[in-house]
Image (cartoon, rainbow, N blue to C red; front, side, top):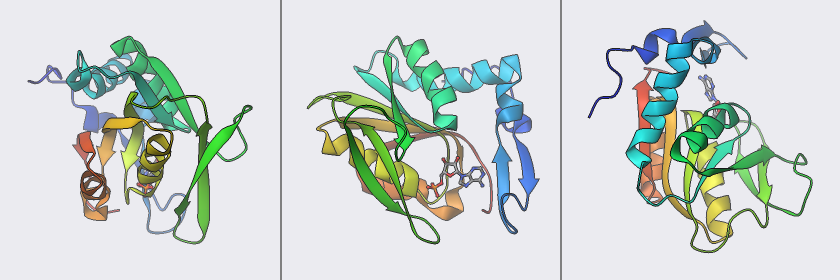
Length: 181
Ligand code: AMP
């Protein structure tokens, strides 16, 4: 099933070489989001496999996962749960550490956001090593949630993140792939 109707999502993603540091090819989705057709095509394509699949919530990872995840939740007629950087959420939180290239980072979610058995779709803009999404999956599972799938606009397959999530038993849905880092 192809709902893209010829719209080339990949063409609207801008690549910025050596940002934020030398060697990184930054895949910039702001040029996709600002195009009215691009934003709609991306959100529709992220959402359609999950229409009528019994998902309870969409969870998005700060910050680009909020823009896409919020729109996907609205499209599916569901509520949205933010997964944020440490210290940003006002009520009681649960946290999950994950490894960065140098050091450790933490993401958090409200402790009462998800109840046992809730079915959650995770959304972010891009999957690279899978460290961030993997931590978000652990966080959702910690609160008893069931991660139905993880959906991303961009996959960087050479970094192995999608495979890592599949090894955790999570279905992965991506729209476009880029070679390299
Ligand atoms: P990872 O945890 O390695 O899968 O990295 C995924 C997170 O880092 C996502 O939230 C992305 O927004 C961001 N990210 C990683 N690599 C890139 C890249 N090449 N271009 C844009 N964003 C990236």
